[in-house]
Length: 223
Ligand code: CDP
Ligand code: CDP
Image 1 (cartoon, rainbow, N blue to C red):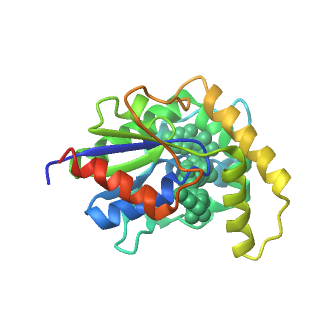
Image 2 (cartoon, rainbow, N blue to C red; image 1 turned 90 degrees about the horizontal axis):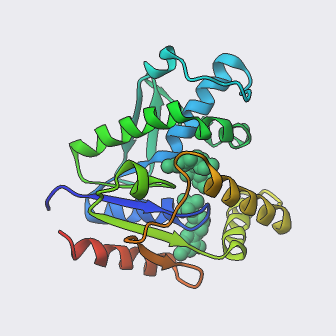
């Protein structure tokens, strides 16, 4: 297969990560989780500062951070900062609460984008996020925009929480999803925008298998 970059963007809960992981594992691509980088930087700031304030500035020391991401054959990823595996730590609720200031910061975004571009030069990748096809790889070989209604996306998140044994209120989750959509669409740099040339897939009434097959067909058509 020739070297390719597949960009997958869309709102929270549209299925980007679960679908991209499967496509990667089934087609021999590396999956790159860009959200995990914003999470990792948030974790690092919380570790060193204890809080993330609106005055947050990205320091030279932080720019020297060694962040790596490995994609394993079982479809999971390992993200490490200076060799420490933070994959589970970055899923903590405190990260989600503090990530907004970090992912709105222009210097952070440039740092993350530099890493993503460096990794994608080395091998064929499928990468998910909000601005992958618009900002990080405007020349991506294939751009996918995954979508689903807020109701469906909230129901998916509720199901995930319930499977983990957590009792959550569907209305609260829906409000969080709508708020996150606003934040993602209104961010000054790297906002979630649907690129005109992206293949638009409304997954509201599709199974994961159907979405995976649709993206695999798109990839087969370009390699
Ligand atoms: O990465 P993103 O926030 O876009 O979504 P995800 O974490 O991959 O997917 C959210 C949930 O939706 C997961 O539990 C998936 O299994 C589920 N899903 C689904 O039910 N149907 C789809 N077509 C895609 C994802
Ligand atoms: O929680 P979820 O799986 O939907 O998000 P994620 O992909 O883990 O991303 C975590 C946060 O980073 C989200 O709040 C996004 O707004 C932000 N993000 C971003 O600003 N740009 C990206 N390319 C990816 C994520």
